Length: 100
Image (cartoon, rainbow, N blue to C red; front, side):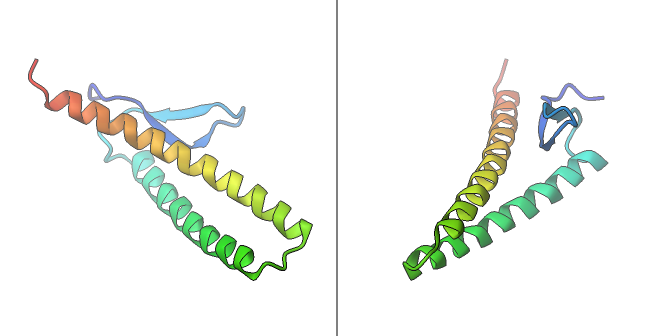
C-alpha cells in the first residue's frame, strides 16, 4: 500500500458515517467511486435544468417546490462531498510536489 491520503468516497457507511479508501487511485473501489461521482454530477446537471424550467414557468405548486427543494438539497450534499474529496486529493498532490 502506498503512503496515500485517504479518499472520501461518494457514499456513506450503513451507519451514515463517511467512508474512505486508501490507495493510489487506480484500484477497483477508486474506479467505482469515480463512476459514482460522474453519475452524481450528471444527475445534478439535469436537476439544475429541471429547476430552471420549473422556476421560469412561474406556475409551480407548493408540492413541486417542496420536491425541488428536497432534490436540490440531496444533490448539493452529494456535490459538496465530491468537492471535499477532490479538494483533499488536490492538496495532497500539491504537497507531494513540494520539495521537502
